[in-house]
Amino acid sequence: MTRSEEYSMADQIRPLQPGEPAPSFALAAANLEGTISLADLRGRPFLIGFFRGLHCPFCRRQVEQLAGLHPALRSAGIETVAVINTPVDRARLYFRHRPTPVTLLCDPDCRTHRAFGVPRGEFLPEGSSERPEWPHRATMAQFEAARINPAGVFPEPLQPMEANVVLNASDGFELVEADKAILADHGTQLVGHFLVDATGIVGWAQIEARDGPNGLCTFPAAAQILAAAKNLGR
Image (cartoon, rainbow, N blue to C red; front, side):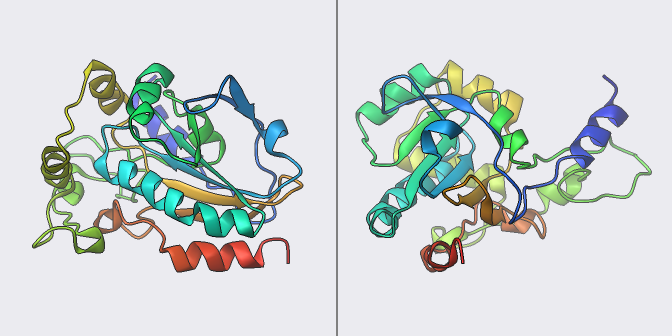
């Protein structure tokens, strides 16, 4: 596959919109036995978040944020599901020591991310005359110039890759070979959240950094998710 063909494929990735059906999936669970599929979830609404793997400290924090929302969503009759692109054995080991009430599924190939239309960043070759269009055809300079400080966790905004290094060091998190492999293959994967009603229809969608790389690692506020959940199915 040529680079131009890769860009063409990236352009075709469009996040699912409200009113569209969620695609079928069946993924290994990290904190339950066996697999969980769309058919297993059908009949009750659910919030599903698609994240990068354990190598991403911001995604680890977002799973914790979803866990914090779990009681409020459960009381509204909404299940909470998280999909991370980490191999299931690695995820089971990590979450054995950090249990979560969120149903945690593993998709190391990001196939379900793509099925829901969650994009990943694609970089134009140096010197390309193509017009940049974040995130499908970004320039490396555009990414390197980005500065992020979600929730004010740093004294000042940092470049995204530097921010990852700082937070992983702060957490005492060391990447194992499985994490490094996922980072190498899917490091530019973006994050997305979808509320799906009891019939399997998307009612709300949110994609990370829609307006540019300065929005990377910034996730929807709890109030935004709960408001969307309240309106689901109306």
